[in-house]
Length: 255
Ligand SMILES: Nc1ncnc2c1ncn2[C@@H]1O[C@H](COP(=O)(O)OP(=O)(O)OP(=O)(O)O)[C@@H](O)[C@H]1O
Image 1: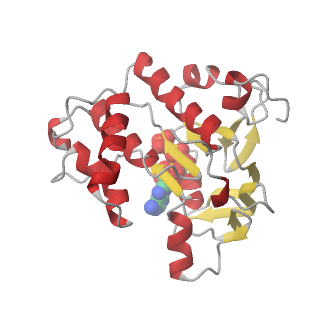
Image 2: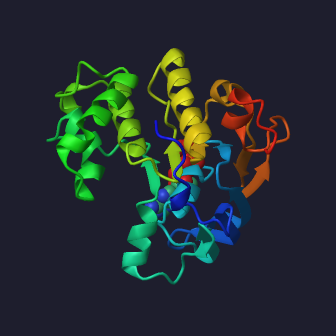
Image 3: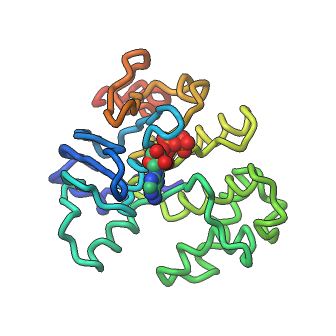
């Protein structure tokens, strides 16, 4: 992994994600999310939990700009997103990597091609990124399955391809919806180390929605819980959001 590319971060605003009094309802339903305020610093590491149906995926969709709130404002990198033009929204979305709960891999492409796709889309050449993509796939345990298509991979293997695809562009924000839902605990810890490494080395802001409290306990990071549409900070778990840096680089006192 490369050192943090400071030029991509806005030096005048250290808030990566901000929700101001955000509510969301689908069609004529009651509010799924209700009056949510949240502010996450650049370089923070945060967990989101809550029962099935509590609204975790919905909240993440607001954060990666796939949905607009019914009320309130969502800001990324210090900029409100509500009135951005389409090209500005696209530019902002490119700074956000997403691991979707249902993977969303392209079935006709190989694992390698799926992971390389975000780089191809922005015009990078295969020769420039081949080694990085292969290394990343090897890191998630798929070094021997580079040419396999998603339908021939297990659920956990597909999940690992999806994670590699989300991190290959080294996004400023990484949002993952149940990223370890289909892997065994050992692979779950390994993937968590990948997220921590991104957080520590690049200052990537990481937000992970999970049911897996075992995973949550591995990292000293704040946990927010959705309950009846409200977001509450879980006092059972600690941390200031700078999990990776604190744990792996205790000499750095600035956090
Ligand atoms: N597109 C939609 N249209 C209508 N209702 C929806 C839609 N998406 C989600 N919902 C409803 O919103 C609520 C929250 O769903 P959401 O998927 O955000 O929960 P979740 O906490 O991510 O659940 P899980 O842990 O089971 O994935 C649920 O009641 C769900 O049925």
